[in-house]
Image 1 (cartoon, one colour):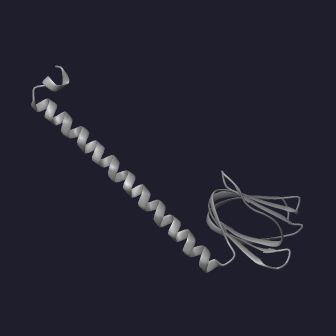
Image 2 (tube, helix red, strand yellow):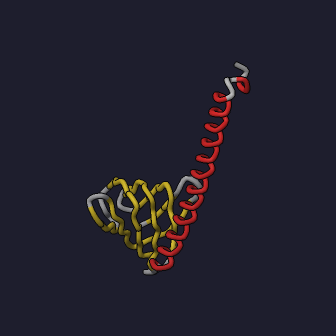
Length: 136
């Protein structure tokens, strides 16, 4: 079978595989060559596979669609994916990226709150000054 995993900016995985495992809202499932056509939505999940040489592979995905076509092709289109050969290393990398993103979002929220407070102070000052600063 052929496995292809993509995110909006790149092809993350494009390889021949013996089997694929994933998890959707109904639970974990496996896919072997000859599987019936299939479509499912993935939440936050690990897609794992055995390559043609038997080596394992893993991709942490955040929201996506998995399809099986003609029993020979498995495609995953995800919003965000992180590939790794070892689950422990993949977990560490994904957690580090999430922490980094969370910190960036926190900084953006703080900056936004400061701008709002500054705008409110200017409005209060203008209103206390009888509207002179606003040209009223």
